[in-house]
Length: 424
Image (cartoon, rainbow, N blue to C red; front, side, top):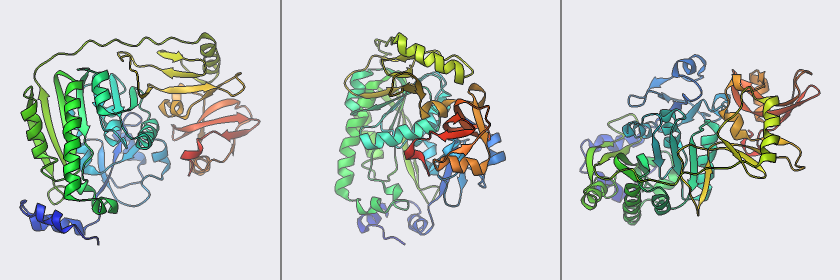
């Protein structure tokens, strides 16, 4: 049993149900998964789920689960679900997203809320997932890749750069702000060690700055949702009060604090605000061009491997991507837009597909090799496996019809092309 900081206990002593609040820290963390309905329906997932699923009340795709190794199953590798703290899943529904909208997740890593937003968008419209920290941005991209999100641009820059590049561009903006992490005490020992009132003050100052840039990126009539996984008033209620005072064009719709003794979860705060004034600003939309020789290399591979002809793609001299309609020209920061399809081989003679492309495909869209559980585990370890002699060239490895990654079939052997960093 860990010890809560004394100053934290004193700060929380005036809440309703204080004794029950303290007692909640004597129980293990509550765990949940969110079914990825970009790939599988909730009904179909229930038929194959290895877990006992109990509905999370505020998110239709989220379920309480128990046990270890939630992130080490074949179904997880296939991107059929995301492991997420249950109270954190309460935030995205408050955005009231409609398919086709432009949505910004300003502080997006590790990607739980971004991938949840993507499910509501249903691969339509534009999602910009931004993370200022480069290492955390890599984790964000990995989760977006695994869940097969197509309509996303992952950016790695400061919030002020987003405000400058996307003025009044978004219909909805989420600020899941970096915070003092009081709701993480049971999950991460480092959250307790790093907690201090000084850190609360630092977080509060940074949150205020981030919110001001979020306001600039939101169109008139748009919705802004602010959330934290902390209970400090300076970062929650007082933060919103200060923001509304400085931004009279915003109106508070609701404010909610989920406390661990009142809900089945570790705790979250959220506030929903409406921007009453302003309009959507005009932005210069990007019009990508295709390198003809690279495009031909890709089309030759596509005709042998995929069961459809991809549109909305562009190429430079080496790589092939999809591009997002309705996306502006952006400069001066790292931006991975759309789906990275793959690149020219080192000898320049062939196209080699990306793992990202494999994870975005459905079973009927690609030539594939279906494997059983034992072979799927073998594949996820990075090993080769036997296949039919008739199989030749690039194939997606599927388990229960869901892609795990690429292999290359040669003379009855499927050579493993799962990226080394993803192998178990």
